[in-house]
Structure formats: structure tokens, C-alpha cells
Amino acid sequence: MPLISRYGIIMSNSRNETQLRRKFLQASTAAGAALAGAGMVTGIHSSLARAQPTRSANERLGVGAIGLRYQGSVIANKAQLYGDIVAVCDVDQNVCDQAKAAFGSTPFSCADYRDLIKRKNVDVITIGTPDHWHTKMVIDACRAGKDVYCEKPLTLTVAEGEQLVKVVKETGRIVQVGSWQRSDERFRLAVEMVRAGRIGKLKKVDVVLGKNAVSQSFLPRTPPKHLNWDLWQGQTPAVPYIEERSHYTFRWWYEYSGGQMTDWGAHHIDIAQWAIHSLPIEIAGTAKFPSVENGFNVPIDFEVACQYANGVVLTIKDNGENGILFTGDAGRIFVNRGKIAGAPVEALESNPLPRDKWTLYPFDNLDRPPRSGKLDAIINHMGNFFDCVESRKAPISDIVSQHRSVSTCHLANIALRLGRSLKWNPDQEQFIDDAQANQWLRRDQRKGYETDV
Image 1 (cartoon, rainbow, N blue to C red):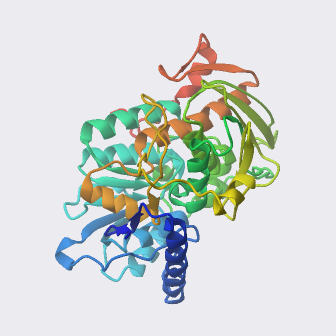
Image 2 (image 1 turned 180 degrees about the vertical axis):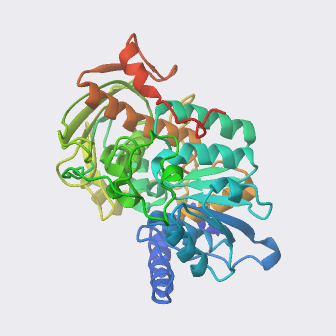
Image 3 (image 1 turned 60 degrees about the horizontal axis):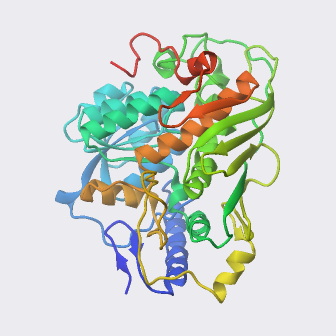
């Protein structure tokens, strides 16, 4: 019989476990649709249904939600399935007011996240802000004794990731990154099959992310009264307000994000690297950059090649079918959010993966070789986080693996901007004999918003 945890983790050694997961997913999808029909905001990528009844009132954790537009609202609603939203925070007063009205418990609300994290009734924090705020908020929340679910990409720079790993280790807090593809059946099966040798020796991985947005030149405006523009900018250089710098389109500005390389890359490159089970040692790429002033400044076209220490080559492109293609010396597997395909996948019907030895490897430990066996079937990424808050075990998208994954995205962007090949030392997390490239590993931070204080 399968073992189902309180928050939705299925563990089984049955050969029928794949079918069981699919039935559970179908039921969960129906439950998620019912929630949506009742007016609740739901995510489209993972199930919201719980495997067990809700906790009693005196067991439920207090959740503080920071950043409540777009994906921030999605993860806050998911967290509400396991805890009570007791505080909300957004620098846009309109967004904050809407969030406050959406949660029936009339939570505390504020514009400055520091007022939220110091509240004693907040046990867990969700962060759905633009990327340039993630690191500081996670650090401050961990130091305040809170566990954190933070949207991807985890960091703005490689140096931020190094600092985060240190702080999370020092504080002992549980941090789950919203790289939910690690909890998706298709992507997990692809990783499992690659590690089990179902395509022979892995030789190459091709990742397609999609095109970056292109813009005209935008005109500065007076910030709207409901938006605290200075606080929104945080660590980044203070500039005149341009509407398109904020909210969803922040991702097309290097000041706040990294374009598709970190937006989609934080998902697909993470899965690719999970299967590769190694780290890059050389990165090269080509790109065209827009020349428009006061407009989106991420590449118009890009292509990157990463050489890994174990010989695997990872390519990252912006054109083609979005997804990941694993190529070995005995077969290929393609996976994206809609399908997993390839002859090795078709062969599972007659040659299923063995279930006699159950092995859990939720994140890469490069101090030992990858182990064969079956990944735990996590149905719900947020549920995994709350399980780990209770058990104090590392979540599936732990801080170390996500720092390593998004760092590869950052390295790729640096190679594109410098327009040349770069050699990387993954142990020291420095470019080799390249002072110019190493300057890009961190950024100057505006006074008052530094992450290292």
C-alpha cells in the first residue's frame, strides 16, 4: 500500500505506483478546478488537493505573504491550504488591499516586509516579489526564525546564492524554492530514467527557453501614489519611474532579473542539471542585444553551450520547442510541461523501472555518485514544503541545489554579455584567471538595502 503524508507526498514500492500517481493527479486536478470555480486563485501547474484532512485550528501555522501580484497570489493561496494567512505585504497599496480583502481572516497588512517578518504569529513566509528582492527577504526571514517558500529564480547574482547557502545553514531554517517542476511527474520520470541509464550514457542536454520580449523606448512618469517606487527598487540603482520596469515586465530588465535565462531557465536548467549530476566548468555563448534606450535590455537572440565536469554538454537556446531533450549513447528523452516522449519512455510499458529498492535523493549531493532507485513521487510542491517544515528535512527544491541551478543561469548571462568563453571553478565559485568576468558575480547594492548586513 502507498504511504501518503499529511501534505500530499506519495511513497510506494509498488510497480503500479505510476498508475496510482496518475489517478491521484486526476482527482487532484478535479479538486483544483472546484476551488477555482468557487473563486479561489489556483496555480495551473500543480495540484492543490490535499491527501489528508486539514489540521485542527490549534495546529495550523501562521503564514505571512510578501509580494501578492501574479505568482505571489498563487503561492499564497496554495499556502492557505496548510496554514492561515495572518499577514500580507506589498509595496503596491492597491495589490495589498486586494490581498487583504481576499483572505477572510482580515490579516495584518503593510508595505514594508520588515514589519511582517517581526510578527510573532507568522511562522512561515511566502515570497512572490520580483527577483531582486528574493535574497534579502529570505535572509531576513531566516534570521527572524521563519521558514520560507520563495519563488524562483532564487537569486540575482552568484554571490547572493553563496550568502544564502551560508545563512540557511547557520539558521537551520527550511527554505523551499518554487522550482515546482521537481515535483512534477513528467520531469521527475525523465530524471529518474536518465539516472537509471535508460538512454545509456548521457552525452548532451538541449534546453529551449523561448524568446525574450522586445520593446520600444519608454518614457519616465511620476510614480502612482499607490506604489512605493523607492521601496520597490530595493538594492537596485535608483532611476526615474517607468511603468514597464515594475510588475510582470520587470523580468525583461537586467537590473531586476535575467530574462528567459533565469525565468524559464530556473526551471529547465534545474531539471537538466539534476539529471546531469555535475557542475559546469566552461561556458560560452552568443547573443544580440537591443540598442533602444530606456527599454528592455535582455538579449533579443541567444545561444549558450556549457561543458560539465563529467563531459556532458548542455546547450541553451531561445528558439525551438520549449522543453528539455536528453541524449545518450542509447536513446533520447524529451520532456516539457505537456509531455514526456521517446522510445525509452514507450519501453516502460514492457520494461518498467525496478521498484525493489526504494531510494530518495531529493537534491544533488556531489560528494557521492548518483544512486539508482525511485524518486519519491511528490504530488504537491507546496505540500512538500509544509511536510519539511514539520519534519525539518530538506525539501525537494533545497537551497543548495537551487543556488547551483540558478548560478548556471547567471554564468550563461555573463558569458552572453561578455561575448566570450569563460572557464569556471565550481568549487571556488569563481571564474579562472578572469578578473573582468568575476566582477559580474556580484552587484553594487543601494545603501539601506544591502544583503550582507
